[in-house]
Length: 136
Image 1 (cartoon, one colour):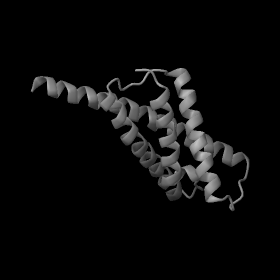
Image 2: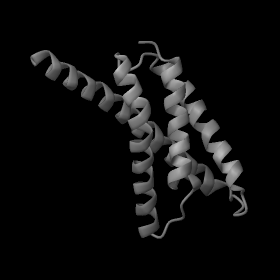
Image 3: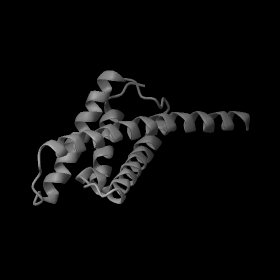
């Protein structure tokens, strides 16, 4: 029983570390998107498919860059890495959507990454690249 509790705590801390990493990376990307958006006006007619592809590629690039800085997976167990792959993108996307809602309340414009689908695809691409590229 004691070993099971240790395993659950270890899994929880491993997954929490990866979730926190993804939330921070997505928040930085959200800030970057708003900084770039503020300097160059984007046309309102940008197609949804272009945004889907763009945010997915952007997430994959950020995931690859994160591997240069942090090449090791924070979750060492297989179960932890799979849990991270499932949970981290959802948490990161929800946090970015919450930031987008704050922007709306303040009367600021939102970008595509402030919407759930684009934010989730960004985070999922980031998580998949980290999952495939990180060493245990």
